[in-house]
Image (cartoon, rainbow, N blue to C red; front, side):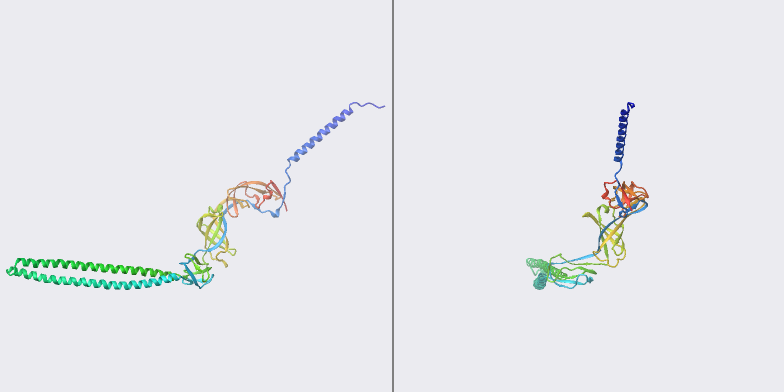
Length: 418
């Protein structure tokens, strides 16, 4: 006999409803926690990582640039005048001394002008001789006139004295004596005038002769200048060294100031280094430098800093304090490092790819077990070529990734595969 069970169906519905709510709650909770999980970190080969360890101690601040070796002293030899090359006696690369003749130039107009001055001087000398003879003749005429007047004056003096004596003896009238005295006084005045004319004539003669002498001296000076200009057409090296450039050919015309040749001393070189303008602000004259010729490193020091910025770089000249290695020649490409200062005690790390002084960047800090790395923000201070000061974000002993990790800019962490 079946017994009717009341409330069983209702209990089943309640049980099913409870299971459903619990299942939904578990599913919702699982979904929530899954949504909170971090995305899987991308993997990076450890062999491709350039790690650096944060250290504390002294740090050398330096800057680096590339450039070339150049002679300290270069003699540029210009063309002294419009001319034509008639001879070339040396070639590029030849060793020369100050009196070595490099080439010979010609200028027919200059030679003609020099010859014309020779004839002008000869003509002026002849004119001076003729003038001197004519003036001397006039001076002698005047001198003769003075002598004649003086002779007449002496005669008049004697007549005056005689008549005065006769007047005392009443043998001459007073009127006759006055006439004699008047004639003597007249001749005396005339003699003074003729003497002054002779003196003035002498001064005039000397002035005219001196004037012509000055003209001759001027012509001789012009002649000497022309001769020097002609002599300058024979081009000398002017210094000891090596001829670096000789681009002209025999027969070519050159203009005044055209560079004919360049003579340098290859045993006395300097390094001309191009340093980025952002790093060159702390470079100063006298700072120690190292010049890498790829065949040896030469010590040096800064002797000049160009005040201008060209194409984002500043030119710094360094004098070489050591011996040149084999193969060190002008225009050789070199690298230069200038020491700015030595910091005694700082926290620093090897310089990352994008590490700029006084900047803030994000780096991956490596886990102690090197299984991965988290992104951290690091504040940098002073920098050198290979190291940079750490102001905040890292501590001594931390290890960071220094190479370019721009492919993982969107990731906060990475894991390493070994």
